[in-house]
Image 1 (cartoon, rainbow over the protein chains, first blue to last red):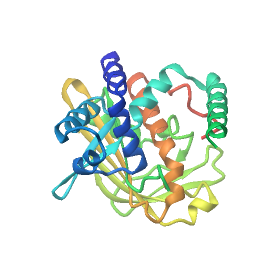
Image 2: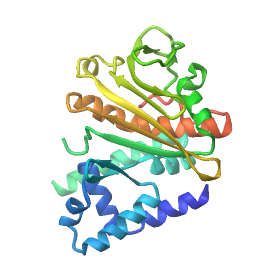
Image 3: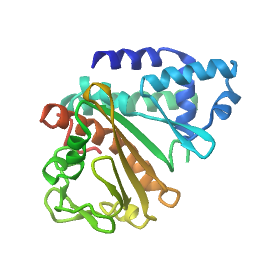
Length: 109
Length: 156
């Protein structure tokens, strides 16, 4: 479904939204208030970004009592990965990704 | 540990009715095609019963989970213990919930929640990449009748 891919890429094409995903990667099950606390934008702005991420399937929300908790859903990124990277290219790609990570780690040390 | 989640939520939309998604989760022949080749014993999925899965060569018991809740074709809850790895096997039991909700246009929304991982942090880190691959493979199998090509890779 290419519409779904469009939504995922559009959602990822924004630094603030990627930052929100990073914060959910650090710790999941966060509330809007928690997520809005360290963002340099209004609560309404954060809500808008979260809605876009949810529409793209990158965030799943669950109710827990009175709270609405946000979870990172990595599956849509996996689907994009599986579409273009098969088992024959996987090992080369991960070797390059490891090399990049190692070089960058050294660079900042 | 940063990036290790004690409640993990995975969601995917599958173009099939809930009954077919339920079948993919409970039919051993289908499970083998997206769950790292695991050989699941035929199971009733009744509450209190066990679901045992073996390595592809049937020599090692990979999981022996207990069904906690069963509402075909909408909800399945079972315990989880990673018996496929000695270190992980010694960690506390966690819980896996499968929710299947019918959607417009002939789609089902499948949500997998792996939680109660507070006493199983290594398991939590171990399964997080696995679930995404499993769900991607399950979707491909149900929608096309064929397994995903990345299935069976050795680095996961």
